[in-house]
Image 1 (spheres, protein in one colour):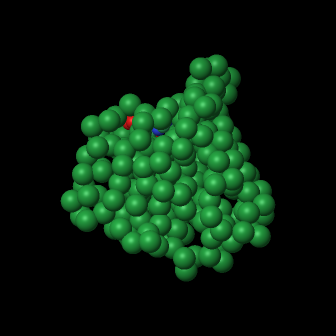
Image 2: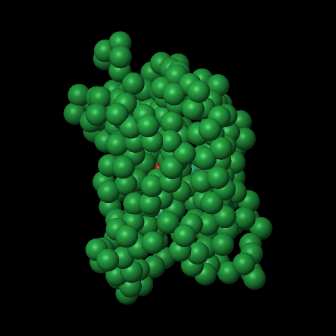
Length: 245
Ligand code: NAP
């Protein structure tokens, strides 16, 4: 560890895109707090991979649907690693269905994890990050595609994009950048769960590259935005989707 080593808190980093973001930031020399909710073994495996590559990481359990969890998670990350420089709001959930049959539990779950939790984490980050920090959030290219069935999920991500732009203006005087990355479909459990091979192939063919995104595709954009050299990019939503929208 060096005195100048940056520290990141990545939510939902036990699996999928978040795990790749954690490994990628660690490869860039950042110490990483690997948050998880229900997969301790997976989170510990990410930590071991980072350590085996010479990096520094810790796994931290927090169910971010709980209103008290974001502040406690920041406290834990700071206690384990030191002051956080980079927040990545990655944890998210998706429950599809037409608005005509809007399900109360699905509405509450998606609002809690996709919108309220990032807002609370942003409140903590705004108070705690040193000048020059980075706040990054995972949106989705369904904001722009507006496909049937994605109403609640798209609403939470559109809200997250709006907050990103507001916070970018609030924190600019301190040199803190605030951006979102909006993936198209990425081959993780999140996207693949419950879909037939035929439907996956049909969705993969929607973009001009004719393939699904990979966690590496998305982590690469987060890594770019987290760099010191990206300090002039703020209040932006980068759609990483192979050109589908
Ligand atoms: P994923 O594979 O389902 O992984 C979700 C991660 O979030 C896991 O590490 C999980 O940890 C964590 N998590 C779930 N509930 C949590 C909670 N209540 N508190 C804290 N952590 C929780 O998802 P993904 O595909 O990597 O998606 C990551 C982000 O990208 C999400 O915000 C999603 O909306 C966005 N995105 C994904 C796609 C896609 O096609 N995959 C496309 C556009 C946007 P545990 O296992 O410990 O529960």
